[in-house]
Image (cartoon, rainbow over all chains, first blue to last red; front, side, top):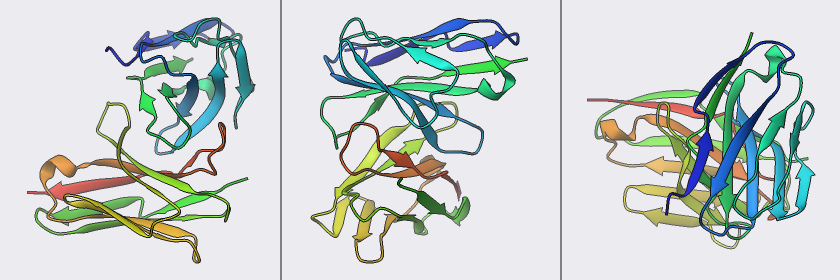
Length: 112
Length: 112
């Protein structure tokens, strides 16, 4: 299994540009999450999904959108990039609640 | 909502010494407490977790203790090694899809 994969690894955006961060898992996990990690801080939940076709907001959803058309894929969309969205983004998945979350390698995004 | 505080933010120990990292949580309904290790530039990985029905759990050199009355839990690493150097995150959850809250992290440095 490849586990959780994310692309791209790095990206620099100009203010106002849009992009999609890709996340794929091959473990047949229903639960998937997007977190952001600001420097020196813990992880904050942006959006999550409990299965294909179902998504919901986390702690910090403003400025982001997600979709979950398949069990494997959970892309995160930034529509109008702002400097405040400069962060490292992690996708994660797990099989059941209260079990280990498996994280992707992260996407380092800079908005200038 | 749940609030997780983690101390200290940085910790430096000599190889072979013990290291202790402490976290407090605010919501008495939280019942799942994982600890993640994140090496520089890498993804977070679960190292140990504990559920509220036990007070202590050990896995080789790592142990976690939970005090539900005081609402705090701690990570103990014995016989530290340089490869233990990383950022450690605690988290707390009530077992719902969207309520995992992470501490801000502790940067542990083990000096050879």
